[in-house]
Amino acid sequence: MKQNIEKICRLLVFTAACFLLKSSAVQASEMPPATPVAADAGVVQALEASGPALVTDYDDVSINCSSKTIGTGETFRLRLDNAGDGAVIKWTSSNEDVVIVGRDGKIHGISGGKSIVRAVYEGRKYTCKVKVTDEGLAYAQYELQKGETLRLHVRGIAGKVKWSSGNRNVAKIVKKMDGHVCIKGIKNGTSTILAKKGKKTFACKIRVVKKDKSVIYLTFDDGPSLTSTPKILDILKKNKVNATFFVINYDKKGEKLIKRAASEGNAIAIHGYSHDYAAIYRSKETYISNVTKLQDKLEKTLGCRVWTTRFPGGSSNLVSRRYNRGIMSRLVKEVDKLGYSYFDWNVSSGDAGGSTNSAQVYKSVTRGLRKNRDNVVLMHDFSNNDKTVNALDSIIKYGKSHGYEFKVISDSTTAVHHGVQN
Image (cartoon, rainbow, N blue to C red; front, side):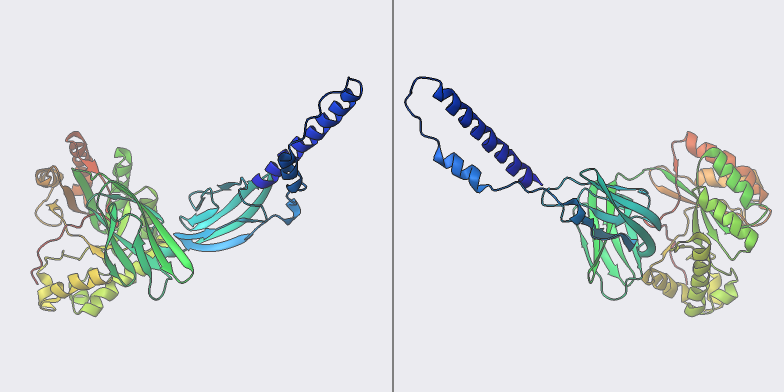
């Protein structure tokens, strides 16, 4: 297009020059003879050599793809064929929560859903309907705190994947395993993690930020329950804070509570389909099956794969020794190998044992908190746990008034682990 405009301009200049020469000739016939002036032959030859101006035939311009299905994190380049080099094209996406598009027409699948990508060129519009599936990367973009490590999982990408970091000084790939990689935040800045498989390219845009200093992670085990969970959700919502729920098997009513918790910004994690120590700690296979069975069910409920888990009784439990000596030492390695992040706690409310009323729950939690660290607080939302429900509002107010920030456990939260004793 730019070349066409330049040619048109040269033609106009040449036409104007000819007109001036003709006018000069007419004037010269009416004036006394003068000394002739030679024309600049080089300029004339250059203008004549430019030829006729070229104008884009808009009927030949088309988008290279009218519909496209891509995975989460996948990139694909849209273009306008026959628009010419240097064409000015404006690209937009109707739903940037699903697809974003760059100035060069490259689309990037952000999350599952649909969007219409439009290109405007010389006043004309060209569209591509884009569908994003849940296959690909778990995240297309992620904010990672300095020092944290993100487990980036993949789905539907079979075989060997080539991974790379656009800026290893900002975000570095520290471990590659089947189904996921571990990415560590090194310093503040941005980096793009690329996963290439055959002709497909997937990208996760990482932004590394400063780490929070004093954080409280409220966690609730053994729910959902119809008596405790709704009240806890109401208190969290009123105080504008969120928590992480390590759930066990649930029915239709429990499913509604899980969906409500997730929709209000809380995190859902795996405690296990069953909490029966004798059944789950019988062997490595029975324990992993107990985790994956609930993981599959949660995926149907939430529409996403959950990778955060907590061992019933914690990784330091001794009760497992009754059923299989040494099993916890094997399990902590196995869950890590499979891509899970397991969490214990460093603050206990005692609401499943020592604390018998809300005052004791409050005292146990507030005395266990420490500044300049991640405080993972263990509580429970099993049926009729009124002592925790009644203490929760005061615990939150204490945390806020003492400068703590409340967050949910994510795929990059640094795990708190106990010492394994079996």
